[in-house]
Length: 456
Ligand SMILES: Cc1cc2nc3c(=O)[nH]c(=O)nc-3n(C[C@H](O)[C@H](O)[C@H](O)COP(=O)(O)OP(=O)(O)OC[C@H]3O[C@@H](n4cnc5c(N)ncnc54)[C@H](O)[C@@H]3O)c2cc1C
Image (cartoon, rainbow, N blue to C red; front, side):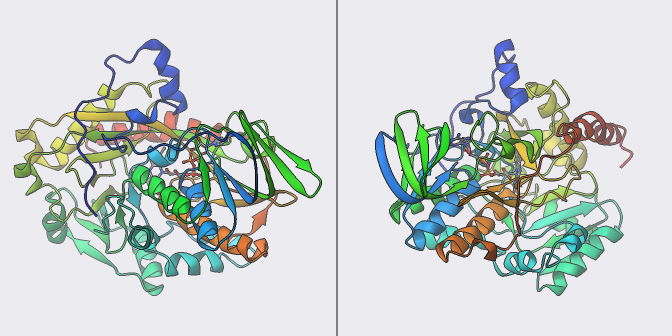
């Protein structure tokens, strides 16, 4: 897939105006701060005007809603998609671009009715779903299956166990030594790692928009700037109200991630642990540096603390994401300085070049667990003929398309219980802010200190 058009100007306010600080803290800065939208804006979808009817209304056009809409439309189900802003304005247009086609831990699945077998089978079978959807629907998502590398200072039993488990499922995943890592990444800092030959990267903004455009081509009616304000039962149907129009529908699928600020189905707003994360993209790197910096273009994460997951995208930029300290989410310069220090230490060749920050942004993840890597997505049965696909955590690029496809197929067949995850009643989590507290105040500061002191 070809890279997106270059952006010309850095879009980082310096210093960040006081009144914008809360938007960085809430992960609601303009999507145009994100490094993923192309310079030439994509076509927008008009707001809903007047009254229409459909079978299914999908609320929200992030990775989840885009996939549900696309797969419903593909199956010939009359679908209307309502997005409060424009597609990928939420977390989906702000993520780090990693396509991770495996789960980090399987133990919590043991408590599921089927021990998670349907989910695992679906993931194994559809592990290339991002690339397959791009190919099938002609989506130019700068998607590249260059694999992933988890690099560590010494062999780690937990990583070996994970690799062995997924190898048994048929994945091409191998341990690599210091020499191999040096050849792939261009650093001598890591002694051992796990190389996943599947997975890789995607531009999540373009990919999400591509799914929505494909849904529209297949007959879904898509409306932007149409925030849903109310969903009310009207006989056998639902009346879904937006500022300038109403949709009468038999079924509703809610894909609003954290569901913040929504008054309809308020129980959904309490089902998750939100966490603010920030993303950074450099200006395109010089070709001379790219010869030795990650020449394999593999997606690179560090084990155990993945402070600076790194992607080199089709525009030759380094893209990363990290977790900002409490109250410091607007501090682009600090996080860029941290990144530079890490790069200079890990890739000494970067010291000879001037690296510049092109974009800095924040977004919010919604997780079903306050334990990292146990944040499995959820399907909810919210009301009569009302379903939700939420809480994709940090795995939305694969889980959004995969679970959206499964839900769409089950709805098209009229058998929603046949989804790959159980349909649950929305349940409020206890202490929703505990995850954010743990990560932003304890884990990340400790990991940064260890990194700063060079202890790991
Ligand atoms: C910084 C960062 C880095 C990340 N890195 C990765 C990564 O590398 N790989 C990965 O797989 N995942 C990553 N994630 C997670 C991933 O981005 C999310 O899991 C995913 O985007 C969630 O998709 P979604 O469709 O559920 O939510 P969203 O993309 O947030 O979509 C929800 C949509 O609902 C809309 N909406 C809300 N209320 C209404 C309403 N009333 N009416 C109509 N529309 C409404 C919103 O406007 C929004 O567009 C990252 C997330 C962040 C923030």
